[in-house]
Image 1 (cartoon, one colour):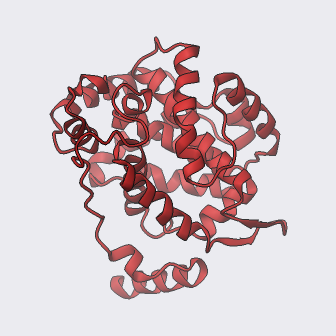
Image 2 (tube, helix red, strand yellow; image 1 turned 180 degrees about the vertical axis):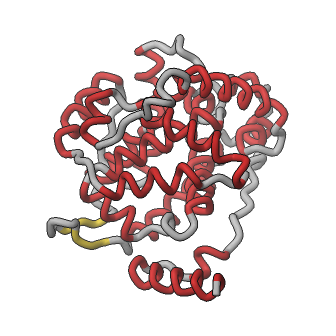
Length: 305
């Protein structure tokens, strides 16, 4: 019965989103970040992008915060949720999204270009209408700007809070400037390239965001979606609270989310400790995309810290 139930869910979700059972069962692609030697890709050693993406805890916090913001915008909400495998297999969806992010951050140039092309082909099939009848298409450059911005804002601010609070406005400018190639590679025509532009754009977008049940459904899924099973749920739930907490209070209110009263006193110190532990552990993750990229470029992994 369980197998029949999953098959029915796959069939139903596939009919609604264009996904197939193969999308859920196909193995993760095995990408080689270690060659060709000397190819820096889009960012390269010395970039803030390599540093910011190297800590998995900060990246998880920033990524969840980004999706909250995305789903609070009605066009992106419809495009992501109505055409997503997240509802059926959230762990695999997060893994694939993470691998695409790694490919354009740490991958050689050809890998990044192929990732842009693959994601673009997927997005070209995504069209529909919002809950109130507005038409949307995933390849709308304005929507792609919002998706890029939420990710860039989330990753940088999570890294600054939980890994390196000393980062300056100039560092933030540099991070957004570096990310322009990634945003435009995915189809955006314009993305903020400075903190001032980012702040102005976020202020412009804030009134368009709204609380909705999809944000809550996403948070319920992500609180429980961990490859470590039951043992990993306390950590996953803490990270989810940290993602909500990363949003300024006015954005929390606009999106209809709030840090739980029980978590509020300890979420920041606890997640900072997790990030420190993860940062130390990642020094020994010699087969990670970041370490492979360092070997490709012949540089020390010190550039990741």
